[in-house]
Amino acid sequence: MRTQTFKKLHAEGLLSDAALQHIEAFEATRLFSLFWELRLLLYLGIILLTGGLGILVYKNIDTIGHQAILAFIAIVTIGSFLYCFRKKAPFSWNQVESPNAYFDYILLLGCLSLLIFLSYLQYAYNVFGDNYGLATFIPMVILFITAYYFDHLGILSLAITNLAAWAGIAVTPMTILKENNFATPRLIYTGILLGSILLAMGVLSKQRRAKPHFETTYTNFGLHLFFIAVLAGFFSEDNLYFLWFLGLVAAGFYLYTKAMARRSFYFILMIILYVYIGLSGLITRLLSQMSWRDATPLALGFFYFIGSAIGIILLLIRINHKLKAHDSI
Image 1 (spheres, rainbow, N blue to C red):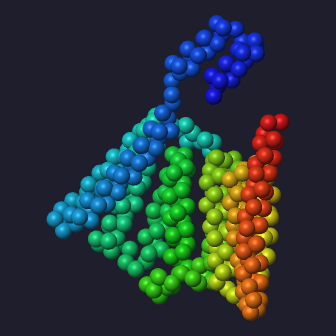
Image 2: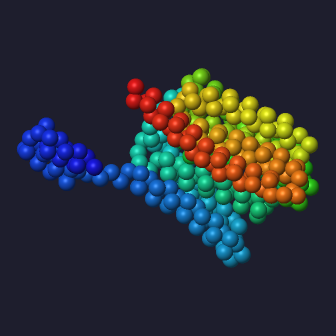
Image 3: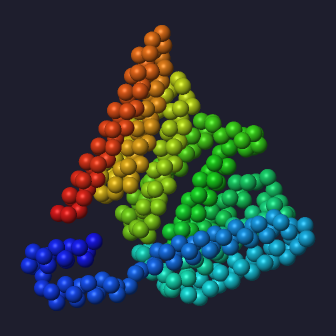
């Protein structure tokens, strides 16, 4: 693409023959970056290693012995954290660069091994008993401290996931856990509260300059958790579905203005899609209440989904062009 542009300039007489030859030679020998490919392979390697460790435990649990398995996992965990403590850069509330290319992956290996160790400890010796909230609370605290101390976004994501698991387990009665019935108002309101807390954490991280680059991760988890919980309430509580829809629109409008202010097309896209799901659910409910003696509700629904899909696409294209035009100013 770049060579074609220079050839066009050469054809218009704006570039000399020598300059064009120099550019073509440079493009032919220019190095190709494998940075992201290598990072992906390293992450996949860590995931496969920890996954293989879990399979090894599962396949040989009766032959190896609990103590040997726990000792091996503990050695991997301790070795990983010792390496990270020795190589880490000084702590700062701003973003800290990794000391080398392998640091982040070894830290991730240590945290995943720690989670496997605690899970296996609970499975083998039931050290936490039936207190599942404590079993998720301890690794959550460790992961949050590790994420901030070593400045690791991947560990922060693990910590937030554990936070969501702990909050869900802490507010859920044992009968619900045993019956796997999670369609309860308690869990819905917990999801809304936790999503709001994560969104607030993102704002505070940026305003207080306390790891401000963590703000995107907090906002991402908080936004999805909040809207999923609101939609769950919208679809599950038939008597209050219109109030849930109003709450969805109000929250969507507020978060949309924030996303426009930060020029984030990803968050704008997610907000629009969540509100669109709620709007489509509302239209479907209203159409289902109409008389079905003729095909009018079906035809209206058909035209709505076609027209709304086209409208959403055009809206997103317009917003994307607007954001790009703003970036070019």
